[in-house]
Structure formats: structure tokens, C-alpha cells
Length: 305
Image (cartoon, rainbow, N blue to C red; front, side, top):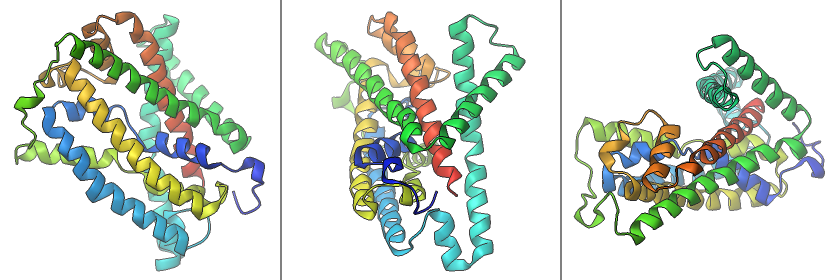
């Protein structure tokens, strides 16, 4: 889109915040971090300070200095020329493909399970993935006035899941049944290869804030709104990761996290541990909505490259 976007099509402050949050959070990282125990908590804070804040600051500076839509594409184009900008933009877009494929595959599997269909039928997987991709594409074509609602709902779904985790953790704490003794720590991760891999994962969990610049001309209030969103999103994401990891450690022992096959399995174990297995289908539905919201948001932002 260009400067011709009408005010009715632009994202207001709350819409921009929700849109950006769903692009930059991943619930799937909670059990990955919790698998190392309380030592993950300082790493979340360290990554926020050493990675997210500098990235957000650079995004704010470059978005303000170089006007126009396209974010990293236009920054590189104006600095190094059109060829470099073209390559950077396309490489960024191609890098989104595995993420898109993962979300489509995951949601197709959930749909097949919910409908009681054969989850090993590759033809059904392909049909559902194609249908979702076409639906999201059409949603983008009708404009942000309508396409913003799925990312907004995805953000709210993430927080509903977080609230459910906190509810279960609070119930267990009230019974003095925490799976983790936080007083015993340790809060310092060992200096080894596994910690290096974890550090890369935690840093990656904070990545993506630069994508808000892709939407520059679609945000009502311009840089003033973008600056407010950048500041708030960092706080929101930090809270989600810290609180979510603590809740995970209260509910399940760190060693059990590595034996679970995915976040859907984690949710099943979480609610079974809390004596609330009936909440699992609803939590998985909210997880699907959260991931679909993130897919829609990234599709819309990436398309602006």
C-alpha cells in the first residue's frame, strides 16, 4: 500500500499494538525455555535488554530517517542501492516461507483431528493448507479494515492461553504442589553448548519487531504511534515470556518439557497436571487461532516488501 491508504483502512494505536504483538510472540518457546529450569528467567531479561531494545531502537531510528513503506527493503535500497535492496527484500520474504508452512501444517492437523478425519491423509492436509492460504490471501486483498481482526484475535488468544497457564499454576501453588523449587535455583545457566543453543532460541523469540516498519504507511499517527507501539510491545512480550515460563515450571518439572512433542502436547500435560483436562480442546483451539493470527499478520507485513 502507499500514502493513498484512507484513514478508515489504517491501523489505529490499539490495532497496531495487537498486530505487532502477535507477530513477535511465540508460545511455543515457553516449554523450550522452561526445559532448563529457573536459569531461563535471567536469559529472557538479558535478551530483552541486549537484543530486543537495540533492535527496536534501530527500527525506530531507520523508520523515522528513511520515509516510505517497505522497512528493511527500503533501508537497504537507500543505503546500498536497488540491487541490494531487491535481494534483501526477497531473502526476507523467502525466510518467512518455512514459518508459513509450519503454521499451515499445524492448523491442518488440528482441523483434521477436530473433524475426526484421517490425520495421515496427505491429500487432505494439502487441501486444508491451500484453503487456509487462499482465505488469508483474500482477506489481505479486502484491506486492513477487515484483515486486522484475525491478528487482533490471535493476540487475545495468546493471552487467554497465558491466563489459563497462570490459573493452573496458581491452583497448584495454593496446594503447595509446585513442580519446581525456585528457591533452590539455579538461576545461572551452565556455560556449555546447550546453553548457547538456548540463548539463540531465546533471542530468536524476541525477533521480528522490525516488521512494524513494513506497515509504516498503514499506521494512523505515523512515527508517533510506531514509537509508542515499540515501547509497549517490548514490555508485553517480556511479561508473556517471563510469566509463561514461571507458570510452566510451576506446573511441570523441567525434565518433562523435553519429552513432549510440541506445544499442543504441553497443553495436554499442563491441564492434566492441574486436574482440568476438559480445558485442553479449548486451549488448543485458542493456540490454533493465535498461530493463524500470526500467519495473517506476517503475510500482510511481508507482502508489503
